Amino acid sequence: MKKFKVILFWLIIFVTAVYIFLYAAYSFSRQTLLNQKIKNTDESAIIIHFTHGSIPKKDCTDQRSRLGGMWGGHVSIEIDGYIYGFGRKNNPVHIFPSKNFNAVFMKESRSYWGQQSENDKLTSITLPITNEQKENLKSECLRFCEKAPYDYATFGKRCTFSAYALLIDNKIFKSQSEFQIQAVAAYPALFRKVMVELAEKNNLKIVRKEGIDCRIWE
Image (cartoon, rainbow, N blue to C red; front, side):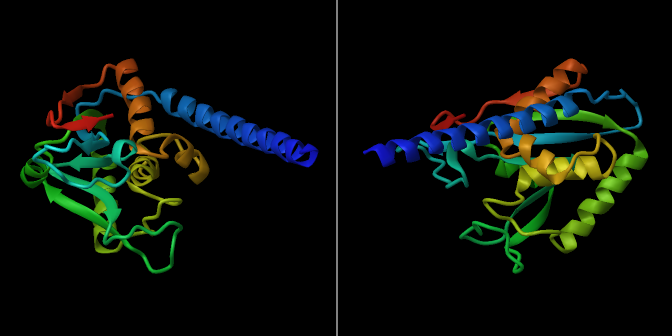
């Protein structure tokens, strides 16, 4: 019994230390993003689309299975009427990154994406950028469409990481390490909350769309 108590004590200490470390990493990464000054340029703009996580009710007409359920969702970037986003190619999803990529970088027209997301709860943020930033971002997205840059994995890089990393790579947001990106973009809802805070701080356009009633939305 005494040995069990000792093990439990050190386990609690370990879990607490990990939590404090991860929270500190998140807080630092979050503040770095919130300190970003958004220049309201009239040159160009992109839209960051956040699909909220959800699960269907029993009698729902939309019984689509969503990766992550309530903790899932999706993040994509709209550029010149096309929606770009990172996702898995097939099921099952890799738990850890593999050299054999099960990943795809998608490009969809605004009309097709609109049909596919008709039932979804969405939060969309318009982000003003320069023409140069937009063209560089579009070029990188198109290059990723030809060949996915990394694997899609549960404990690896997913849609939220990909979207934030693209914005950093193209100097739209301040540079952060991969670990810092993961800390604030671990899943869509976490990144969305910070982005909404940034948008409100900088008077950016936010459009919210309600989802179909028969799904439970986060």
